[in-house]
Length: 63
Image 1 (cartoon, rainbow, N blue to C red):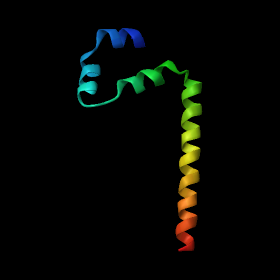
Image 2 (image 1 turned 120 degrees about the horizontal axis):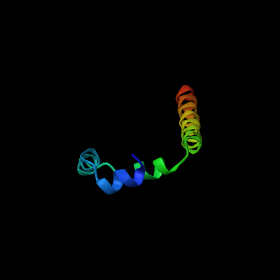
Image 3 (image 1 turned 60 degrees about the vertical axis):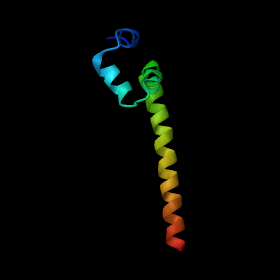
Image 4 (image 1 turned 90 degrees about the vertical axis):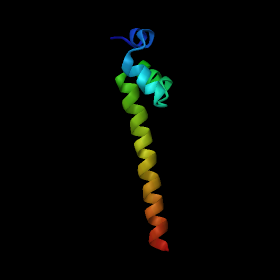
């Protein structure tokens, strides 16, 4: 099922997720991206998380 079909049909699962407070616009936004774009965004986020963790570890080692 394509994104537009899923959104238009408003499946029970989609409605349930919205009711629970999930921001389905984020799901839609990510599904519009190509797999390569999703991997690139994930890789950048992961690199940032690793950098922050190393900075925290370095700071705590000095304490």
